[in-house]
Image 1 (cartoon, rainbow, N blue to C red):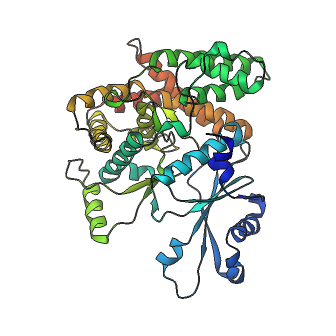
Image 2 (cartoon, helix red, strand yellow):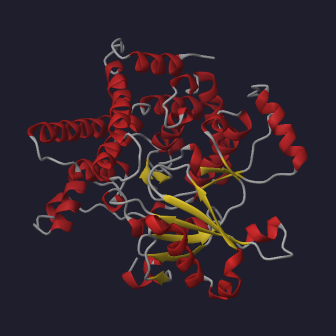
Image 3 (cartoon, one colour):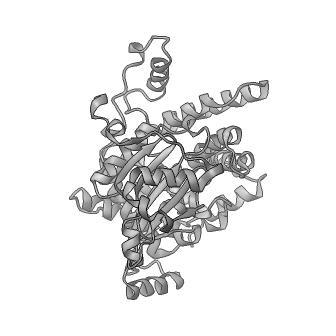
Length: 425
């Protein structure tokens, strides 16, 4: 894709910043730049703050004009998402815009309106933000499985990646080419960037001011290389491409429960409250938001990463899906995946994917552990990233002990996680 054709460059740019210390004024200025016709009725503009994430600021702007119903007001609402301090180290904002644009073309994301100096403005999706408890409801996880199957089956990765050049072709000391050479060496022949090279980039961004920091960075890089050697050639779903267009951040706050008729909602709540996971449990209609981490990845990683989020930021390992629930989720996912590729569901594909997801269960802890180590250095948000990093990395190292037939015995929380993951019910 040439620079002139890039969705990032073609998207309207508003040369203003959102200032968290002066939220109301700076947000209003951005909204009025987008919607100058709201100037005359700016006294009826209201901002609703969402606080489900731990990196970005997300505001909903509505204009409560007299005579309009809530549905009509919401239909014209705007979402303002401002990036957290220093997150450009973690996220490629141009790639995020390409991802969002592609999803919008496939009716899987809201329309993008504009970008500004530290964020995006886009159409509001009506619905309710999920909680970690919601993710464990049978109607919700069935909806997530179906939507994720659609993502993985239909979205091309070509819009967010390129063919990896041979390492020998990238010998320049130019920083960009040196970065490409590092990616090419880690995942030769694979589309880049991808989930493995994303982790590589994050590890290389870790501080090395002290001997301990340098040693830890080297240790994490060695772990990444061993992970790629172990899992980098995992086959794709049903013989499809090894990489899919993966969301890579399907936590509860990024899953939206779309409005449904009240009768259907009541039925679904009843099914969910009973704990039923039978095939006749109705699937909720869901959408996914926030595509900043979307990148080519094995489907097994995206699914395992979602399962890890069932426990929320508190890492409640009692909430991990059991083998029975994971198998039911994957059956729903495969039926959707195959339907969107005009193929028939094959039961033998289920066991293969089940085993692949099981093998990936430690990787999300490694991924988010590195991420949190960086956030601990750059973020101004009041969240204990350093402790969160150790918890998530603990998941990875507990899983690693099982590779050679070992068992985690020292960390009680990780013992619980492995126990619940291995349980049938």
